[in-house]
Image (cartoon, rainbow, N blue to C red; front, side, top):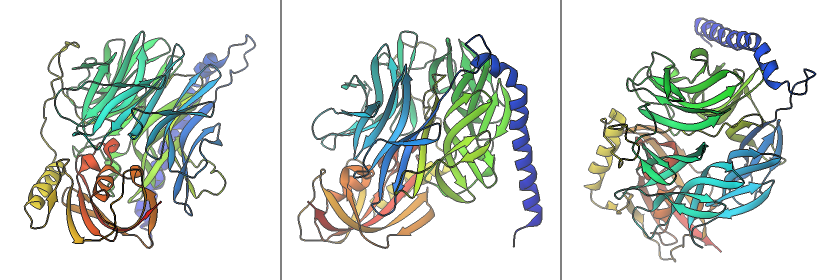
Length: 520
């Protein structure tokens, strides 16, 4: 039986949230009309909303890369290989979509696929796309299991790969790319969770006066950046001046501009426990995402029992505010959701699919780019030409627990530790052949997820799965290459080898995997 008091409080919160968006729509109606009237007769200019993501088929267990234009799905792949669309750029009448197919970075121009490679047997991932002066830029990373570290930040310009420099031996990722005037900025991360910046391919110590920067972009002629202040407050930066958005601790993660109005969304860390991220199953409602308009709190990103706690991108069209981000439904993790004016939007699926997932939203009337949340990066001075200086701010308790877990596990009998940090133990040794990175395999297993040393969930597969190795998370892919067919291994996968783009240094995966067959 539902708690009537709790139900009433939730209803009041929801009414207040919806009222705040209704008030916003009424107050901004006149300015929006001015912005979108352009034919001298007061008729609105057509603005299209594009969403990038994927649709999942439970029967084939594959994702199809999809984008939606004004709610109508357009399939980019045939569903035969796992694929996703992650970012969109609009240039004139051309639609550019970045994505990934079976471990390969790609982009599509008006539906025509362009593969992005470094060599013939590489594993690449795309995160962000932009078009400038007819040139197509895609940011991501390259993986080569023959080298250590094997994840290297890079970008492609018109399909040609460009490695991004980094000092020392670190895993690096490039997750966001944008242009400001004649400069190309790339934001990424180092060793999975510390922010890293490049300007015109050269490493930078900082971009501006923000302590931590999630992205920088040029919108309607002005330069904007989002992140947080030295005090830990979420903030945005416009043409060299920073504006704090709230007294809470947190991080601004995305920005959109409509006329003279600046909209910013971000994450809340008012309890000081760190930003909630995907890969965990706990729910902390104080970490619900926020949306600000011109520095004033517009709304919490919550619709009934569904809330977005980490916005990924946002767009504004007239009176409508669109936000895509990671979500919780009650106490359970949900795929990234699309929210419009405070309400969750369920996009139509392509034929044969079971559900859809969203990664990115953009309007044809703006130049918003996908903004991926980074973790802490601290700078020492304002000299943007200085060499990188990363400062350790101290680990949160769960992150320290994760480090301690692998240190203790390494000492146990039978545990083998690879140079990458992957640990495994042999439960049963098979006698069949070993797979190659390019192979498809049939596997069966049990997955345990942990936050630090705390177990968050256990999933036991009910039937075997056929999958391509390059499409698996790095730790599992690397582990399978150690196995003979017929073997059962237990893998202890550190955060950097799990889901690197989640940037969660406390998230541990334990996989007990049986290699049943190499599917030729």
